[in-house]
Length: 224
View (cartoon, rainbow, N blue to C red):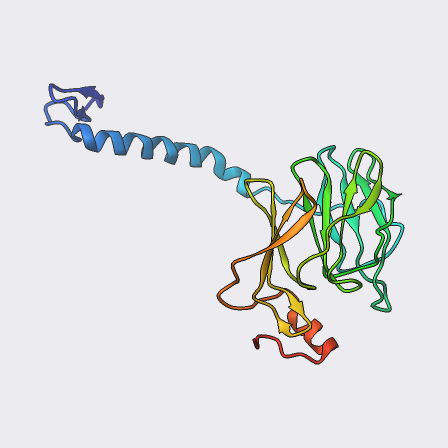
């Protein structure tokens, strides 16, 4: 028997001669895209069997943990701050060049810090805020000059918080750990004016790496 596909009067599809349309117009509009997606997955599936692995690259000039990494517009990666093997905050910063797989030193932070945030701003600069060292301070990195400059101080000192770039170009900083324990407060940074303003609080306080910070400051993680 020969199989074929053709349209009937109602626009439905025939899959065998002599049979009524197998699909209505509405059903065909759903079934055909699903068929196409299914066929595409068949061709893509072999890729899933490929193995991926990490390769070694250049070593950083300064060993660190808890540093913050930001992908810059020029394709390089900025790593700033962190802490050394003695858990002391670092002020150094480095740039990774994926084209050469090497690291190069760049301007150091004005304030050594870790458990801070680093956010790429719409103008290509990087905002670093809070963290152990001076939890109310903030500074901005300019990739064009490789230097840092101080900007407005946060309304509330905080570490282990979150920072999110909003659609309007402002940066929302929320939660974290402060003098009173886990924070529920939030504030907005305006890169145009270089200032912070408070905004609505979180329903419940939260912070990253809270247990470690709480132990250091004899706080109680999760309490508010």
